[in-house]
Length: 457
Ligand code: 0X9
Ligand code: ZN
Image (tube, rainbow, N blue to C red; front, side, top):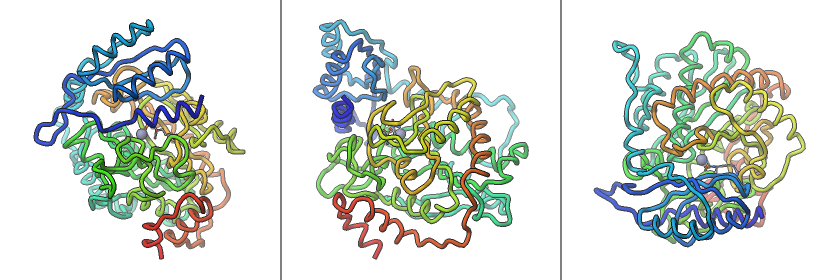
C-alpha cells in the first residue's frame, strides 16, 4: 500500500493545470477545495484514480484509508467529480468554495489593537509579508543588534536573490556553542512557515523575557529557503510550491526543494517529471537553494544539534525517516523530545510520529538529510491548520499559531544545551568538499551529479 500511495501522490502533485491568467497572474476564481471522505481503502484508491485522471491536486497528507482527502478542484471538473463520488456514495464537503476569494481574504489586515504603535520595521504577525519586508527586517536586526545577531548571505537563489541565515547568540564565543537550526519557506506557498520563523527571530532578539533561551544555545534561522518561489507566490501564482529554476528538457519550471536533498535522493515519492510538484530536480542538490543551505549546515555540523524545518499544513510533528517507513536506532529519544515539546502546545494539537508512517514516503527531504549527517534531533513541523483553510490560513491566525508554537522552543533549547556532547570548536570543515564527499559516500550509483562536481572541484 505504501508504494501505491507514494506513486499516486506523485501523479497528483501536478502543476500543469490550465488556469486563467491575467497579466501573467494566475487566478483561482471558481476553484474549490473539497474534503472528501473515503470509508475504505477501495474508496481511497477510487479517489486517487479520479484525482489522477481529472488533473486534480491532492493537498492533504495522511495515508490512512479513512482519512479525509483535501482536493483542489478546478471549475471544469466539479460536476464530473460530484457524479463520480455519488456513484460510490462517497461523501464530501466543499471547504473552500472559491479559492481566489480565500487568497484575497488572506491579504486582509487585522486591525492593530494599539493604533499609535509605530514599529521600527515594516513587519508584524497580523499580516503576511513580502520577501522585501522580511529581508528588510533581517537587515534592520543586523544593524540594530550587532552584539546579538549576525546576518550571513550564504549564497544566491536561482534568480540571484540572496539566501539569508540569521545567527542569534549572546555569547562572546558565538559559533562554538550547541546550536539549533530552524528553516522556513522551503515550499513557496506555505506562508505560515516564514511567518513563524520570523516571529521566532523577533522573540529571541527583541524580547528580554526570552533571554534564557539564549543562555546556552546559539540559533541559526533561515526564514525563507526558497525566496524565488516565495516571491512568485506573492506576485504571480499563490499556489506555487517549488523553486523557479529553468529546465533544459521541459517548459515546466522548478524542483521541489524537499525532494532535492542528497540523502536517498530519487527514491520513493519523488517525481522525475519536471511538471510535477514533487519533481526531484536533475541531481541531488541541483537547486542552488538546497546546495547553499546544506553546505552552510555542513559547515556548522559540529555545533548544530537540532534541525527544525517548518512547513504547512496539517499539524504534524514528523520524525525521520521519511524516505520510507524506517526508524533510526535512536528514534525513541527523538520522539520523547518532540512529545515533550508538543506538550507545550495549547490551542493547536499536533500529531507526532514517523514521517513516512504518518504521511507518505518521500525521499530527498531536508530533515532526512539532516539526520543522515548526524544531527540527532531532526524534525519537520507541518504547521496549522488541520481544518478547512489549507494554505490560505487567514492572517488573523498567524499570531495565535506563532504564540502557541514558540514555548516548545524552550524544551528544545534545554535539551540541546546538554544533550550531545561538547562542541568541537576546533573542527574546520570545508563545506563544499564535505558535501561532495557525503554524496559520494551515500549514493555512488544513483547520482552522477555533473553540475555538483563542476562546482566542487
Ligand atoms: O511533502 C513534503 O515535502 C512535506 N509536506 S508538504 O505538504 N509541506 O509539502 C512533508 C515532508 C515530510 N518529509 C518526508 N516525507 N521526507
Ligand atoms: Zn512543505
